[in-house]
Structures are given as C-alpha cells and as structure tokens.
Length: 459
Image (cartoon, rainbow, N blue to C red):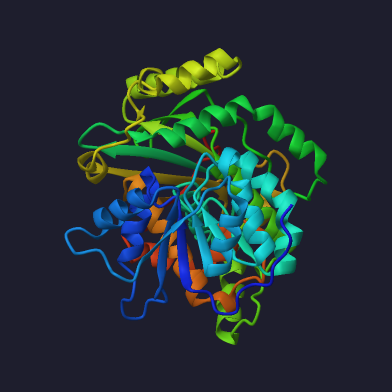
C-alpha cells in the first residue's frame, strides 16, 4: 500500500497526460496543445507520460503537425504497474489526465496514487463498476488529501449530464419534469468506427455485471431524489420516436448511472458542492444554477433512422450478451471485434478521415407537468413535453478530448471554486461552468420544442 505523501507545493506541470500515445490519448494531446501558453489559458506547462519514449515523441510530433512540436512539453516514462512511477507523476503535476483503459484493469493504481498524494485526477472511463468502486474505496482519502477525482469526463458522460440538466432547466415553475430520455444518434459520411478499448470495456463490463450488483448491495443505500408524478411504464423494445424521426433501442450505458449519482449528490447538497475558497460571484452562480436543475427519471437509447440499423445494434448486443458468459466466448469477442460488431470496432481504430466525417446528435425528450400540483393527482399523466438537443463532432476522438480538456481547464483556472477533494461525477463538479465552454468549442445545446400534450403522453 502506498503511503500518503505531502503534495508538492510547486509542481513542475499544470497537466500530465498519462497514456498520451494511445488511440484516444494522442487526440487529447492534440486538443490540449490548442490551449498551451495561449492568452487567458491557465495551461502553461504540460507533460506526456507513458511506457515508450519513442511513441510519446511521435505522438507529440503528430499532435503538433503542421507546426513543430513545442520544446517545452516534457516526456515522462511511467506505467500503471509501476507504483513508484505513478507516485512520481502525482508529485510533479497539479492535474493528471488518465487515458489508459480499460480502467477496470489499469485504472485503480492511478486513482490510488492521486488520492494518496493530493493530486487532482480526471479520466474518460465509461465503466460503472470502476467508477463506483473508486468512490467506495477512495472518496474519504481524497477528501482528506484534497485530491479531486472525477471520472467520465469524455463522451461518457459529459453530453448526457450537461444535456439532461439543460433540459430540466427549461422547465420553469410551476412546470416540473418527470422523465427525460436521451436518444443518441451517430452520423457519418463514411463508416462509423470505434476504439477497440471502448469495445473491450463494454465486453468486460457485461461479463462482470454481477460484481457491480454485488458492490451496490454491499454499500449503504442513499435516498433517491423525489420526482413529481408516477414513473412512466416501459415502452416497446424497439421504439419509433416520431418527433425526431428515429427508431431507438434501450442502451445499457454509463450515462444513466452517472446522472443518477449526480442527482443523489445534489439531493444531499441542494445548492451544489461549495468550493475550497469560493468567490462570492461563484457562490451566486453555483446556487442559481443548481436551483434551476430539477430531478427526473433518466434513460438512454441508441437511435437510428433505419430499422436495419436498429437490428444491427441489437445483433451486437446479442453477441456480447451471449458470449460474455464464457471465457472462450470473451476470447472470441476480443480476438475478432470487427466480426462481432459488424465492423463498428476494430483494433486499428478509425482513420483520420473517418474521425473528421463523424458527428453525433443527442436528443433529450422530456415529459412532465405544466403545474407541479397536477403531478400529485391520482392517475396523473404528463401534459407537457420539452425536447432539447446536444450536437457535436465525432464522439471518441474529438468530443471526448474537447470535454476532457475543458474540464481540465476549469480545474486549473477555478480550483478555489471547486470542492477540496473527493470522488465525484463531472456534472456536480463542473455543471455551472462547463456548458458555456463546450459551446465555445464546437458542442451545441438547443431547445427544439415545448409542447402541450393531450390527455396522455407516449410511454
């Protein structure tokens, strides 16, 4: 076990990116370089960390192209299996961005090192078991040392968190939301191709679902937010959402888990989490923001314009669900990802052209009541619908780096306005400040429609 070390009062670097030469890591480097030593940016010093100096140097050259690589970006050798190297990283930086997945295999030593040293930590995992286990193991230690540990700072789950909060903020009193469903639509002029590590995380997550349930049973149950009105019944397996012209299928994703954790934390802290030495202006901003966010049931569906696309998604889910139960099945899934995902995932990842051509739309369809008093009536049904939308570029290599780097810049520029330490979800930490930053960097938030419903709403 690592012993706690006093944080370095003058770290060498503002940010160290761990796993910088990986598929996603190199795009995070590319995004971070846009803000290195630019006017008004808090990012003045940067280092890249990983197992191979040669690969890190090549990553820096690729990320800086067509410019020459900056001379003041350092390269550091570190490995998630080498605990002293992780401790050394933490003592050299204010903030560590961890891009090494799958996190259930490689993540805990990095979190442990940060929690022990007091270094702040962000990652881009979408693995619920890892996130909840890290909260259970390291929250108290991180609060003690002043280490702010925030997972899911990429496409999982920034657009979902910020999107559902944007939707619920449109419900102006006396109106209240009851249920918000996010419909995720991935689009491209070329083939949509995902990162193998994302696929591997999904396979291992399904295979270890029983461990997540066991973890949840072992922890004290926290009170759930009070949501006006009865919960809507489950709809059909394959839904046609007429308002947005998409067919959809329920998606077991981290987004719903992360949003639920944020709402539970908000219930315990109705005005959000106070900062270490928060300015009066930020206190007012934080309290105004969180007073406008309302609890709602939340679910996520993967959407497609065609029925064939839905059947393709369903087929991938069936393959993973059946084969994950056996070690040989898991070997097959991970050995032949392109075959079992119908070409959506491959070990080489997407080409740069495939990344540039891809984008996403995330529609948030909210049902609720025009007056909160209606929600308490017997057999009440929603009489109001609000649809909002979040749109942005390719999810894994563009939106994820944008989201992670903007969260990092908030940590660097507003550390005194953020909680001292602890293991949290991104929404509860960055909510008041993040949407504006995302909008300035290519991710849009729009209100599509506000509609009065007839006597009943679709399930």
